[in-house]
Length: 189
Image 1 (tube, rainbow, N blue to C red):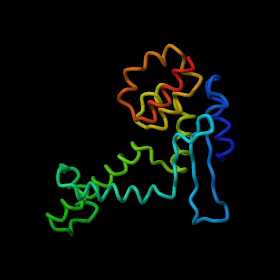
Image 2: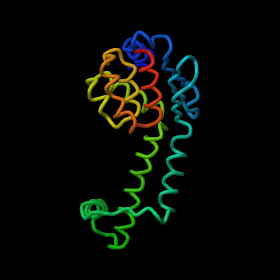
Image 3: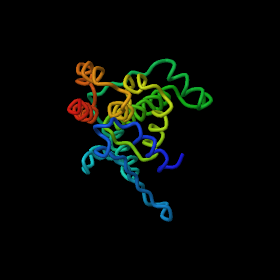
Image 4: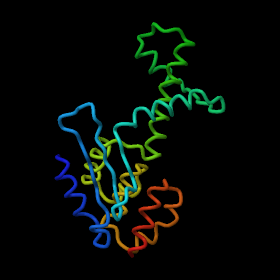
C-alpha cells in the first residue's frame, strides 16, 4: 500500500477531537537510495514520536554492545537454544563456542526488543505496524506490547470515552510515548 493511501486511512480513524491535531508524516528520497527516510507523528505541529531509518541500526548495535559488555546482566541459555545453534551449525562447532553463539543471538534479540520499547522504529516498521493495525481488531491493538499499535489505538475513534477512562491503571505500565497519547486523548473526553 502506498504511503499516501495508508496515511489517509489512518487519519480517517482519528477521533473527531484529534482530527487535524494529530498528523502522520513520512519523507523518502526516491532518487537517493542511500538517504534514509524519516517518519514521525506530530501533535499540534510538534514532533512527538520520531522514527528514523538512519540511526536505528547504529543504535541497535550500540545497545547490543552495551548489553554484551555489562557484567551485571546474566542471560540464561536454555537447552533448546543450544540445540537450535547446534542444528544451524550442523554439529561442527565445539560445545563451549555453542554457548557463546546462543548467548550472542539472545543478546541481539534483547537489543532489538529494547530499541522497539524505546520507540526507535524505522519508517518501514511504521508502515508494517500501521498496516497490521488496520487489519487487526481495536482490542488486539490496545492489549499489544507494541508501542505504535497502542498509540494508533488510543487516538482511534472506535475507542470510546468510557474505555479511555477505564484504562488509567494499565497506562501507568506503558511506555512514556503511549502515556503521552493517553493523556492527550483523555484531555479530549
